Image 1 (cartoon, helix red, strand yellow):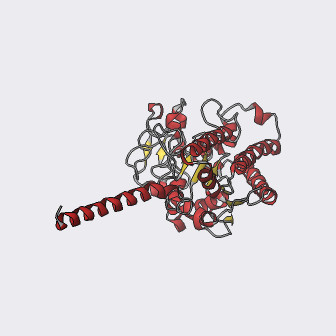
Image 2 (tube, rainbow, N blue to C red; image 1 turned 90 degrees about the horizontal axis):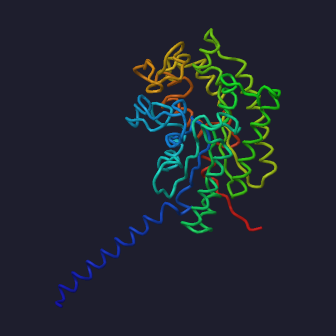
Length: 375
């Protein structure tokens, strides 16, 4: 072989080795805990990125038809919005890809996390039983996924990923709103305080379950004024907020704040973020133009008074009306925000000040490093 040919061969070999190393590094990078903090999502339709598409449920709990998804994705994805949801923005701010729904068919490594939220889910198993994946069942899916992580990546790396991850919750709305549409013997047989205690007990039980697996950082939203949603304004009859429901929500939010404080005092290394979602939404309702919104009572999409019926789009083939600009509204359908409002809420969750979120915001939680210690 000539000196020139040998030089060319060495040069080619050097390039191939470099490409191999770069490719191997790219494959390894996503799962290195120092490079990525995973996001695991639990809850209901405010956070469901498409899990309900793959459940044997009714159209009431699905958003896999037009006009859902029209603004950002240009097609329905199963999200109850015209575009992205709160967790989609949180993932973006954290430098993560869109977090996939866990029930979506296909082979996924869930390198950035997983979404277990399903539309209609409650903290109580009795809420819409048979049609949704309740919160404790979502925990079981998480435990199943954890086993797969260990199988794919080994115990040490899986454990480190779990401990560094942020766990995001939006749950409870259905436990209270459903009692106004269904004959809930559980609700009727208990005082309001007792019922709230059961809801909170299930939430803290799931949080404790994740903690026992190594999770330490939690974002748990309080509930918004769901009595002011278009569906509840229509039910109330005069267009006012359904205050009976909002009073239940206030009981829940007070109990949730106390429960999280107790967990913080009891569990070593437990850190959390809680958005005062009720006050945030009421501020939009009271001062919409200050935040770039125009309509706070009527939904962008729907039918009937305040477009408060749940028939938005292809659901049951009913007729519906659709506004030309969802970003003018704080409700896209009878109970869910449009993308613009979701982005506003996500920004507050990510970097809001202590007057609306605390003791940490999500940006601070993502930056916290949990140091595992051996017992």
